[in-house]
Length: 97
Image 1 (tube, rainbow, N blue to C red):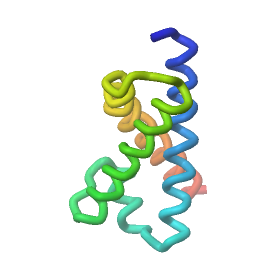
Image 2: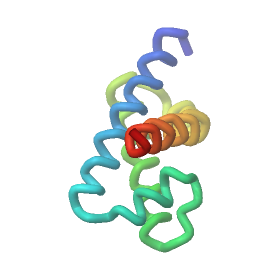
Image 3: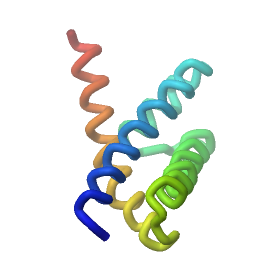
Image 4: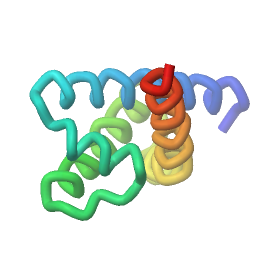
């Protein structure tokens, strides 16, 4: 895997997470989104949302970057918690303002 692909994967992951969470908030799933951003989805809805997000990301990495499934799954397992923490921190920072 090349460094450029890794950068593209991080950007794609960030964009996908942001879009996905916005759509969920528009649907009124505030509590579920909060659980996912904190990294502790305890409800069935939270776990389902996280699984859906992971699957969505894996598919996008395979289709857009041409990665193998094993590599895409590994990247999602590493990048998703980092991106969720980053997005969660940004949301908290915006709310505090």
